[in-house]
Image (cartoon, rainbow, N blue to C red; front, top):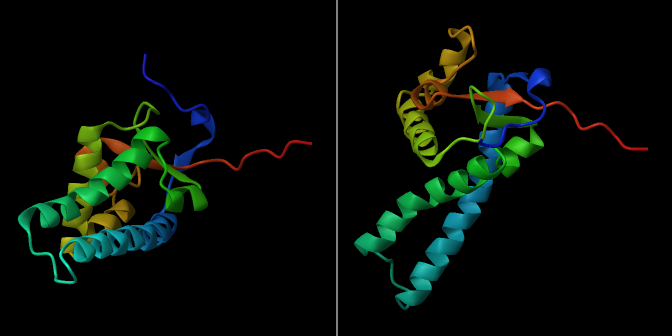
Length: 149
């Protein structure tokens, strides 16, 4: 049986502000990863811009690897951890590779429509955005961890 998150009774659907704040955090991390990747690519070509097809394809794969690793491992990227939100299946499990891909496609579609896909949560009774709907997932607020004494 797949792993199920432990705190399902205490979570509730995440709002727009937390989601966007986590996106900003994660964009900074992804930006640093892309800068490192670009530095490596330029170094390997002797200081020239790398226009090789493989280099460009890998650049498209980086976000999938980044989000795939974090979402499939714990349901949270570092930005999501900071804002106490988690992506999960509707049964409270970590998402799979197909759902990761569909969330990323849904996110691209949302941004391509000037953010309409994210504003959709104001219309949807379950506060789902297009990435949530496309992938059959949900983003929830995780309860604060209790302090140990």
